[in-house]
Length: 291
Length: 169
Ligand code: SF4
Ligand code: SF4
Image (cartoon, chains in turn green, brown):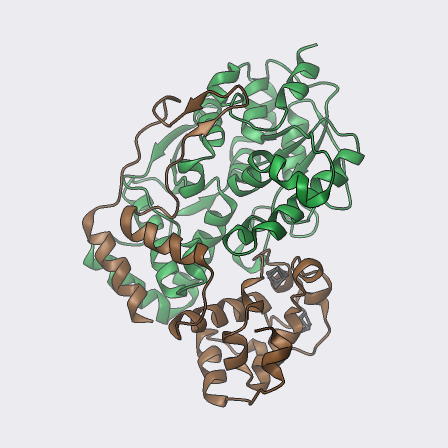
C-alpha cells in the first residue's frame, strides 16, 4: 500500500523521533510513504489571524497530495489533521470559500481533488493496516507493561468533520497499544488537553496544563505515556522538565510516540526510532521490556 | 485591559456584531440558550478564566468591539470541547476564532507567537524554524545527522499568493 504523507512544521523542525519512527515502522507493515513535492505550514497558527488564508494553506496541502496520484494522505500531526479535515469540509460544504480557494490554487496551477482521504497515524494503522496485521508483525511483545494513552484533542473533535475516533471515549490508540502486548489504563484525566496551543500566548499556563496531567499519571504508577501528536510529544516529553516548576512536583514519566513503541516491538534498532532523542526517561520503560 | 474593565464602559455595536456573524457564515451562535455546557468543560476556564458561554452571549448582544480588543480571546487552547458538546451548534470556538480574525484586521494587540509564525511562513513556508536537538547525553543532532531527508520549500508562487490572501481579509 502506498500513501502520501504531509508532515507539518512541528515534526519537520523538532519532533524528529516521530518522523523517524514512522519512516522506519511503516515499511515493515508494507506501507510505502510518498513525501509531498513541497513542504509548508498547514495553516493552523494562521487560523487565528486570517481564516481564509489558513484554509488556502490547508487546501494547498490537499492539492499537493493529489499531484502524487494517490488517494490516501497520512497527516501524523493532530493540528494539521484538524485543519486539513476542516478545509476539506468547507471545500465540500461551503460554496463561497471553495470558489475563492479554487481560484487561488488555479493561479498556481494546482487543483483540489475531493477524492483525497485524510488519515492520522491512529486510524491509518487501526483501520487500514489493521490490528491483526500489526499483531502478526510483532517480534518483541511488550508483555507486562502498563501504559496510559493520550490521543489529544483535535483528531477526535468535532464530529461533524468525521474524526479519527469517538469524541468522548476514544479507544483506538489503546487497542493499538494492546496489539503490541501491553496493557493500558483508563484514567480520569484522559481527555485533558496538553496545552500546546497556548505556547503561542501563555507559556506558563500551557506548561501547567501538561504538568498537571503528568502529575496525575505518575500517581497511577504507569510505566509510561503514549502519544501520537508532535504537539503532545513536545509538551509531555520535550518540555517535561520545564513543566516541573509549574506544578511543584518532580516529573519522571517516560513519554514516547506510539510509532516508537511499535517500531521497538517490530525489533527496529533504538537509534533508528529516535529513542535517543526523547528527553523523558524512556530508558526506564525500555529496560522493563528487555527483561 | 480585562474583560470586566472593558465591559464597564461597553456599548453594543450592531455593525461589528454583523461582521462576526458574516465570518461565521451560519448564525448558529444566536441559538445559544446559555446552558453553560461549553464553559463547564473548557480547558482554559480554571487557569485563565475563559467562559465561552459568556463570549457567545456578549457577541449576540453586540459587545464585539470590547471582545476584539480584550486579551481573553487569546486564552482559548483550541481543544474544541465546547464545539463538540454544544447542544445548539453555537460553537464558541468558531466565535473566538472570528473575534481573533477581527482583532487582527483592526490591528489590535495580537500575541507575538502568532505574528512570528506568519512571518516565518512568508519567509520559509514553515511556521517554525528548523531546530537542532540536544539529547540527554548532550549530543546534538540535526535532520542530516539523523539521516532525515532534506526539506523541500514551496515554489515562489506560494509566497506571493499567501501574502495576497493575508492582506485581503
Ligand atoms: S454555546 Fe452551546 S454549550 Fe455554550 S451555553 Fe450556548 S448553547 Fe450551551
Ligand atoms: S476550544 Fe477554547 S473555548 Fe472551547 S473549550 Fe477549548 S479552550 Fe475552551
